[in-house]
Length: 256
Image (cartoon, rainbow, N blue to C red; front, top):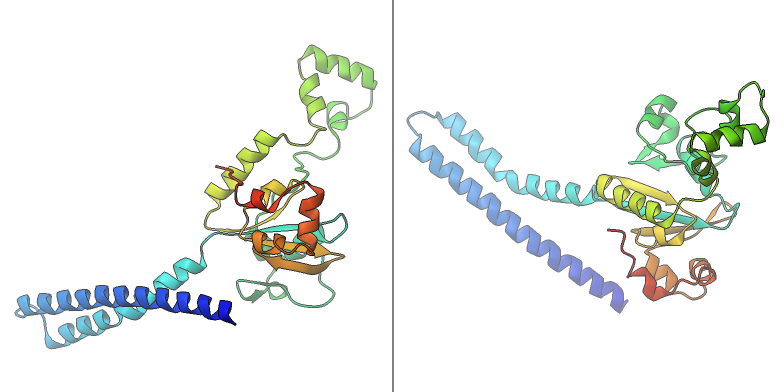
């Protein structure tokens, strides 16, 4: 109760601070409008002056709404974690309606996605998959679609054109430096978007706004990373422990 009241007091004080300054700005604008009407009384009619004053008086409400909407559209990054088979990929597929939910409703911006056409829905959401597909089939199939050559012959040709190591490295996971650059780009280029991150490396989601932990397709935990990790009995804390990541590491993550 004490903690709730402390947060409520801070919120009320911040709102009063903001409201006072917005009202001061609105009053100055109203004063400027009135002075302008006085100096231009020969050019303005009474109806025009009344309309100007009316709109000026409404500016306080408009400024309040502008500030609230601006804060609502700030970046919101949610990290989704869970063991293998917990339902992370199914959650993303459900957002695109590739998998239809058997029960419940998914809302995006307070709109039921079941009421939106597939083309409209998928055109508004962007996904960066774990396995990016540029062409159909395997690399070997695209090099030798008719299977006229053996693997040894193909590797020999790749070595001759100095592409052997590049093809071999494609089988490996992304390196840490490239991963850091990708995360940095996401945070700079998508700062006005809501980002859902499903990652194998926990360091990429430790600075997220929220952490969502799934287990067997069900929501297990959802809160700020530090708050969830502070509970030693939470699933998130156990995952961090298995990865040898400590609570103090969460605040020190820097992807810039």
